Length: 388
Ligand SMILES: *Cc1c(COP(=O)(O)O)cnc(C)c1O
Image 1 (cartoon, helix red, strand yellow):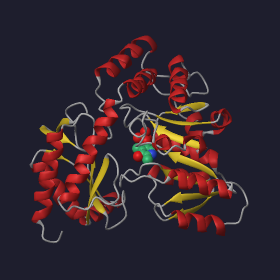
Image 2 (cartoon, rainbow, N blue to C red; image 1 turned 120 degrees about the vertical axis):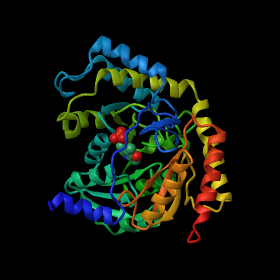
Image 3 (tube, rainbow, N blue to C red; image 1 turned 60 degrees about the vertical axis):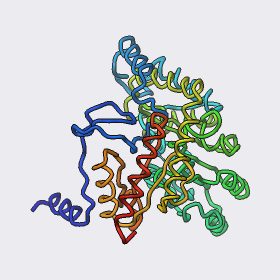
Image 4 (cartoon, rainbow, N blue to C red; image 1 turned 135 degrees about the vertical axis):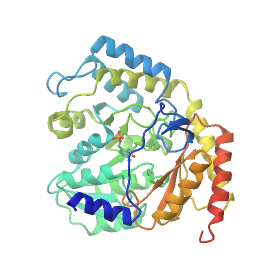
């Protein structure tokens, strides 16, 4: 057998083999997956904007006006009016001096972390940070110290023990993508000030959803001005594609001059930029969307806890149901699927060994009845297995 066949067989044996599944409909609370109509609890389309008519039309208008490609790196001729308009709009929305757009949040993270710490510097990274932040730390060339998840006493000790050569950068998700719990940003600000470190916060899952105006956990916890480097994405609550970094004008100018994930890749299609500008307008003008996400998420968390299920420390619209082994997660997802409910099982290496789970995400497009049906199905399906 070939190398690849061997490795795939090994994954299959461990219940970790993955395959791509075909969606036959746009994203939404109800989707068609390989021919079956299902209530979908696994998209990151928190505000239900991925298939918003106004945004599709904004993208179509821009495609007619600007064409469908940017045709060059942002630093050559790949910066069009729509790119600059979007960056101004993001900076205004985030109350930052400046913002810079990348073609994905992943690429934005590579740039953000590398700007905050490079060879000779030290990064302090939460153990459950998103894979894109982990890759960003590795690629930065800085030394990496990992602190236990949300264990800020541990972070404090690590900072105290690490000699002060070079810069120090604390890196964290604001809302953790697989657990739905929040970083304690005020505590991190206090620590970073005490040690003279910088703080880089990835607001991918919180942008548009958390905070009264949807600016994220920084807004929600009242510390956004103290964060040195903020990353966000246009691909989750905003429903499209792309990522951004925001912060000081100097930070953004430095990124324009040094960020390899900006310089050595083609600019975003202008249609995506124009639709994202509209999406930010919707975040501003339709606060009912995030209010609804909050209400439905609370209904779900309460219901699951009442049903005796383990949702960890979730306090948000991302709600895990922890089951332990990968196979148990697959079985539970299968039982839900049989009832028309699409919930993705999350297995290692996306989460640590032994912490396989279902990851439920709530969107503004769900109904209370759909949430209740999911709670009932989970109570009954999880209850059938005496080992849980
Ligand atoms: C999804 C995600 C990203 C990457 O964003 P994309 O725009 O999808 O590339 C970055 N950070 C976190 C925490 C994420 O969950």
